[in-house]
Length: 402
View 1 (cartoon, rainbow, N blue to C red):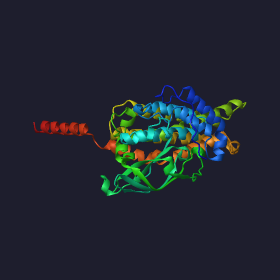
View 2: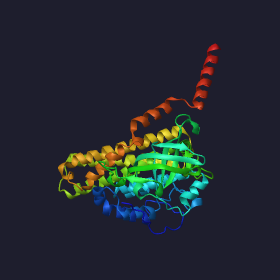
View 3: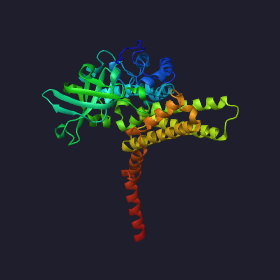
View 4: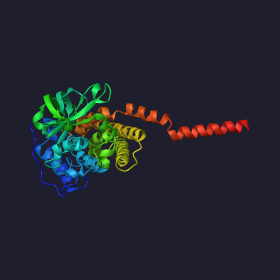
């Protein structure tokens, strides 16, 4: 399947996404109608892909000078979660369409012009894990390799692929770059067969000896640090770790919300629900609402808080991971409480459980590594803390001598 049909024009040109907007609601409705079929077939409906573009996800983080919205993370989170209530796979594709395009803002300006010269509604997929090899040429690079789990690759117009470049590229032995490759330069192999999130088209991108001009590449560290080409909007000035968890957690928030709604509807239809079932509903609803609060705070930090460096990055990573852990526990409890009635293929509560379980396994959403890094920052005194401690110690010593 190669779905590349564009939706209707979006006005005004710079509009991004918002949870209550008509185009997002329409996408959610389309995603919901096709959810069971998409889950069974392993690919999103063409109408849903067109709706992702029409709703403004592709342009949400595109710089304004290229017709995009340079939008915020809170707006994206709300819109993704709203779509995720109907189909987590389409919500994932929408979120990563926005997030992958954001990486394009770190390319040199001529590379951005290649990417968005025809307008901001370009579907970009990204291979974030370094793979393959890139060999420097006179005016660019020769790129070869395979990138697994590249969500949305089959219906993308461009991909941004991360590849190691070796010690001669300015970052020691860990140097790597992102390379922008147009659709004619890569093939897609259907390799995604998963428990959940089945319709995300998270397949394998293959590139064979493709020349990438220098202006279509950017050092990975610039993206990690949030060093975009100037002038940089807020959404391009944030470090990747501050926001990456949000892009992956939003679909799970929507799916878990839908699971609570489905369980509530089933209990409401019963004459007398068991106490254990009502307790499961209450506890799971509490966990989902708590996760929403954590994710909303993380999004607000990304949008508005002073960029405080590693401590904020560590807290956001911790909060996103813990939020998804809560969402997984909530859906798991509801699934177990429902018994055999949700074992049938096509049951929406079962699909929500599979989808949230799949998202919770993402490397960016593992709580233990995020928690350990956060604890390390808590236990490492800041320069202000060290100054206060040293000043207090000096004063105590002087007092003792007196």
